[in-house]
Amino acid sequence: MYNGYAVMKKHIKSFRNALDGLGWTFSTQRNFRVHFTLSVLSLVAGWFFHISNGEFLVIFVLIIMGLVIETINTAIEETIDAIHKDWSSAIKIAKDVSAASMLLFAIGATLIAAYIFIPKILLFLGL
Image 1 (cartoon, helix red, strand yellow):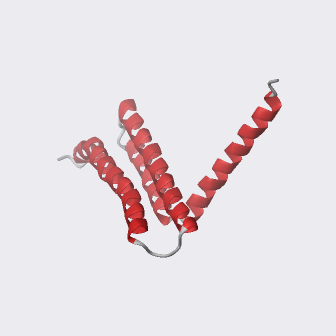
Image 2: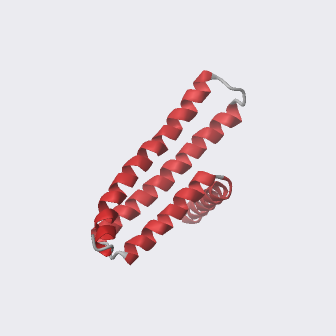
Image 3: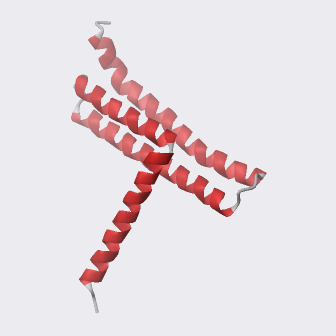
């Protein structure tokens, strides 16, 4: 028999766990805080330079994707550390490749942001 209350209770618990994970990530991971800060600055710049709705959508998607990739990277690194604390070449590769995913994203996001913002900055400066 379907018990809607039990299902809702599980979803609320899952949501709280996710918020706990987000809070832990924000409070312990410097790179996550840097990404978050740059994200806020991007939104402020978007408002200041009057970017289009479509450009705001692109910025929002980039922000969410970057935060998601950073949390996945953190989860992978923390999982590896919890399983095996000693150094090994396999662990180094796993952590390096996980970090590389964020690096690749950051490079792509920077290029897209430059494409959106540089023309507006040049126009603002009268160039």
